[in-house]
Amino acid sequence: MAATFPGGVKTFSTKQAGDQIASAHINDIQNEVTAVEQALLGEIPDGNMQYVKKPATSTDNAIPRFDGTDGKKIQNSGVTVDDDNNIMIGEAPVPTSVAISTDNAIPRFDGADGKKIQNSGVTIDDTNNIMVGEVPIPTSVATSTDNAIPRFDGTDGKKLQNSGVIINDSGQLSGNGLDGWIYDTDTWTYVNATSFKITGKNVAYRFPKGTKIKLVQSGVTKFFYVIATTYSTDTTVTITGGSDYTLASATISGQAYSYADTPQGYPFGTVTIRVERSTNQSIPNNTWTALSFDTIVSEEKPATTGQWSSGDPTKLICRLPGYYLINAHVRIAQNATGARGINIMKNGTALIANIFSPASGFDSHFQVNATVKLDTGDYIEAKAFQDSGAALDAVATSNNLYIEWIRLGI
Image (cartoon, rainbow, N blue to C red):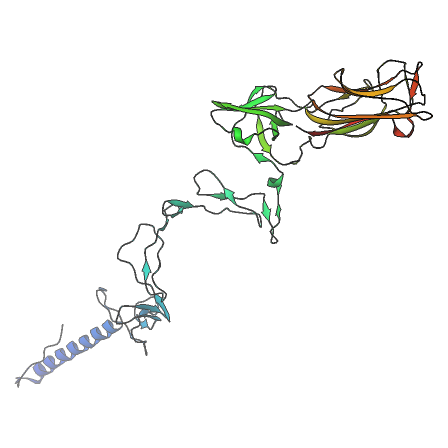
């Protein structure tokens, strides 16, 4: 409370009374000075108001800030608010807000001066899902392979995952995904030993004749190619695996198809064989006689089963259906009498035969070839003929007694 000083002239009856009044007013003045000092130092006990010390200098329009934690002093700052309410941090403007905004939207600059922001259609919800309008932006993965192509994780388009397909800095592709197979997400179901189906979908276009097939049953990888495809409620695919593979009545997994010539691991690439005889073979008079062979010169099997065996030495046995080009050759010992011949037999029936007159004074050489459609298990033989009046040798010298084929395709 402010001290009250007497006005006018006061007369005191005693010196003691005057001294008491003067002493009281001096005490009031001292109390007021103390109160002002406390206020300036921020020491008012009730804390309702306090004054802080100003800085020595300040920046025009700068927002003051506290200096220390006791609230007694302020200092200058680099944040200013100009007369148009533009906020600056140093030389950089702080963008002003918009009138309306979309909840969770990411603000964007309005103009090139960095002073204003505007609304956007990109939002981040409370679980950190990013959306552009109604379309989700996939989130990243915790770890990744350098140069790997990302792929979606799930069907909602919100997450990415790593992959094994790599594009290096020269644009070259590598990885397990480049094995030539297209891995199907549809379920394949066993129908019988030579067909499977895809229920309720028309995907016949995926499986034209000749399409290569890979699948797994009971831990065994099997290979086939497509013979035919039909659709009626379900897509049914008819296949063949030659002598090596048949479908079992079991779950199909790892299902894949390919249009490549030789996708990775596919065993049905080039199929060919040549067998020869290393010793002469006697050909009886006037009898078509099957040529018998004892040596495989070269063979590319369709999978694991051989196309010739010493236990049945006259035959080449088809292990994979398709068209085959067959070639056979025989050399018959010199004799000028009668005729000579060679033919190609399919399953015991003659396909084509060549009949020649023998050369005089020389062994006779005869060759025959044919393009034949074969199914698994069909067999081919070559037969020789002569009617000289006695047996003559089919001569093996200089690799002149052989049969061979090469598979041309389906």
